[in-house]
Length: 443
Image (cartoon, rainbow, N blue to C red; front, side, top):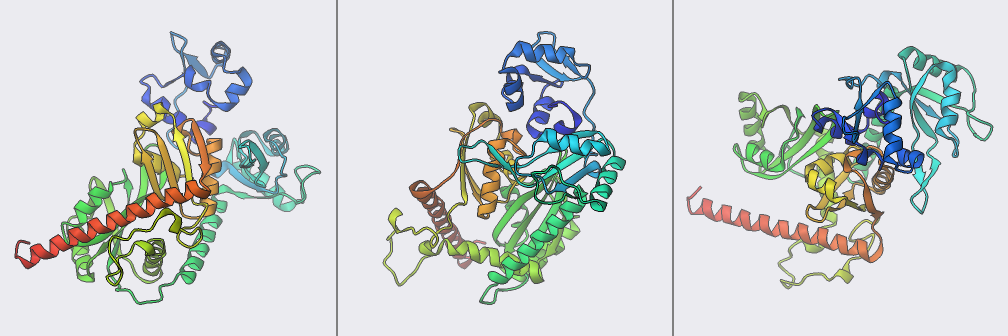
């Protein structure tokens, strides 16, 4: 199962482990930590080794310590056209039950069955849907047509009839739903005061995501900038990434000047070809709405010349729901081996692959991390993925995984807000130095 095409194309951790080994092998020490193998073999290396030797699709290293595939992994993932989204799954449905039911239309290669987590962290009820991967596109289409034409239930325990669609169609409807949520968010947080239009350039590209410092270095060469960001939005295996970012200039003239210069230089950011556009309309309003929403949690630290200086709020002055939103902080601990192997960007990419993350605080020495998510749903989703190791396999074994609450949450928000205050002060000092240098004729 673990080395099959269907699983390996989706398992980042296992795929990266194979690619790092010159012979494409995985240590049995790593395999025996996987939940399914652990339950089937009790982590016994000899049992795992003998099972691999008996398989025609696997090979074992000469020293017997590693296992790998016989055939190389397909270069491209062709599973999406033959994967079906199925809705109406019972709360207690199992992989075996779904496989038996769906097999009437063809060979089932893989089933993804998302579940909620119980309070003790164990897998609980299903989320009411699953993804079924067939061996061929024809089998997938046959299953969809049959489920659309007939009112079928997975079992007597299910309350609703099954609904099915192509995975690509489901992804499209999911994207449209997110756009609808964005528009709703825009309406709710629409700026109540005018902002200067034309200050923001948005860039996008495919390749290795550029660092924040590289973005600053590239665009600041043309005109002064006030803020910048860069985000990885999707990955295509280990080969390439899609990313986008925003750069806010001091004035609209600087944005236009930069756009003209970048077009002359064939719009490159580091080694990547990028697309550039000046934000307008709803995209520009949504950008400023998000900026203003972020300012809400910084209100207590904004400088006020009419108030006494050097008065800092104590931890007791933070009020949940007013000064910060509760339920957004997800804390987890990486193993020493993974912490030594992964850097901040790799960890953030892994998290962004399953849920929208606003900020990541990571202690590289201790391996501890705290992710601030965009909303509570994203926080719950990340927590479930971390506990189930779904979509974040590259992070390895996770311990002490939880959504912060109470005093612990308040203390973490204190760190977040204090960090923002320090960065604002540093930015103000740098701006003051820059203005003095201009006044003195040094720039």
